[in-house]
Image (cartoon, rainbow, N blue to C red; front, side, top):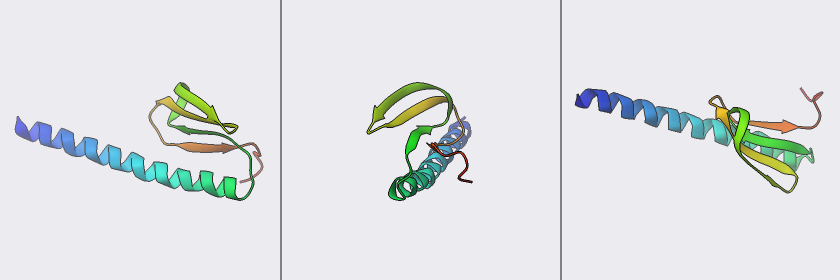
Length: 80
């Protein structure tokens, strides 16, 4: 029985660390866009309908329902 809890804990730790790494990576995109003078509309963690959101300095920060990854969104869709 202890093995099940150990495996579950390891999986949870891996998922949390993975999310932290993705968050820091996407935060880099966000900060680079702001540094270049691009207007960022939204920075949210995960996708879907926000379960929490707050607008600060014209940027909507949010925590959404579906688990995937964070994403910064700029206002120019042609920047690919």
